[in-house]
Amino acid sequence: MGQFGFETLVVILLVDVLVLAAAVYFLTRYFAEKFKKDQQNKADAVLLQANEKAREIELEAKDRALKTLQEAEAEINRRRMEINREEDRLQKRRAELDQRFERLEQREQAVNKRQSAVDKRLNEVEKMYEQHMAELQRIAQMTVEEARAVLLQEAEKEARADMARIIRQIEAEARAEGEKRARELIAESIQRVASDHVVSVTTSVISLPNEEMKGRIVGRNGRNIRAFEQAAGVDVIVDDTPEAVTISCFDPVRREVARRALERLIVDGRIHPAHIEKILNEEQKEVDKSIIEAGEQAAYDAGVTGLHPEVTKVLGRLKYRTSYGQNQLAHAVEVAKLSAVLAAELGADVDLCRMGGLLHDLGKAMDHNTDGTHAMIGAEFAKRYGVPAKVVNIIASHHHEVEQETVEAIIVEAADAISGARPGARREDLEQYIKRLRALEEIANSFKGVSQSYAIQAGREVRIIVRPEDIDDLAATRLARDIAKKIEETMQYPGQIKVTVIRETRAVDYAR
Image 1 (cartoon, one colour):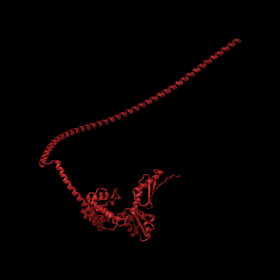
Image 2 (tube, rainbow, N blue to C red):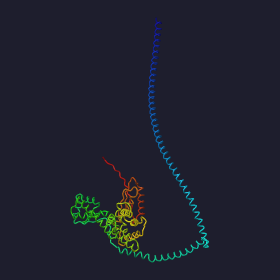
Image 3 (cartoon, helix red, strand yellow):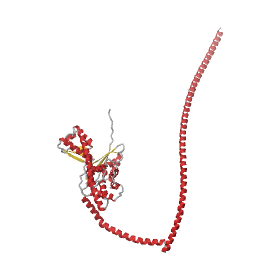
Image 4 (cartoon, helix red, strand yellow):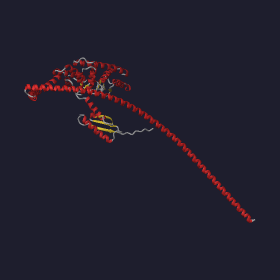
């Protein structure tokens, strides 16, 4: 019983082991198959996704290829059309060249025929010339070279003798009479046509009846003076000068209008913006009228007739222009008279010289509104209004900007120089001073990087403010040297001029 029970237990244990091994085997196989199946599913999913993406890429590539193909076909069609057009143009050009070549061949044939005829005629003429020369030599018993040599020797002797005699005579007469005659002409012309001139100013002083009038001119909060300056285009200076105000303006016509209007307002006593504008308009009309009258009077004084009204009007504007203290309208009349005197003495056209002398500075009445030199501006204006061509040349050439075509142009130039150079005619004053200051500032402003420039100390110093982003410290030093050098080369001045270049850098921020 005991042995049987042990064997039974062993059998049971073996059976349990086998069952357990079988269970482990089947479980392991199950999980292995399940894992394999899961991996297969994942692989299939990845493969499916890759296939879909590949199809998408393939479709996109096909679309791009189709689009590129269409663009290429369109470009090919466009190029083909251009080539067709170019081919048509070349064919037309070739046809034109063929026609031209045919015409040239026809012309060449005609020229060849004509050349043959000319050569034949030339041969005939040469034969006739040889026959005539042989006959002349037979009659004169001299060859052509011998006759030419004798003739040239005799002619050269006579010409040299006459030429030497004439040269000595001209030199003697020129030395004896030239300088004396020139001095007599200039002195006589100056004495016969001497006149006075006013001093050049850029300001007008208006006397006031009392100091209270200054306050009325200024008005409440400066209303009246601002209205007057805006409407008249001038500056009104109210300073410590007792019972007087100053009108400042570089345009003499505007300054004259403002002076007359302010004198009327002071006498009237009603000084307010509306009345100021009314008085200025009335005085503008009066000044325009006086300009026309001045032009007509100048033409009458100079003895010039037949001028267009517009020319007379512009000529009258010279009444309010001065140059170096010399009134330009009086200068024009004086040049006309001097030109007439010189023309009469020299046998030139007196009327032409009168008109040219009167109108030679016509451009100075408009050169502040038009670009160009006053000679060319005046010539263009005169030509536009029917002034004779010779007078137009006199106006344009009196400063040698164009060639002088007549002796009258030279006479007017000489008269212009006489009028300006005679004693007491001109003086260098405020106008020359202002020109020098302007020239200094223009030279400084002509350099790159300059923002502002100021001529101070009566033109003895010029201060230049530069843009710091364009000019550094080293460039500022170089700029000062370059400006000083250009001033030395282009200007004439006494003493020395100090050039100061200022470079300033600012840092700005805001606290909010």
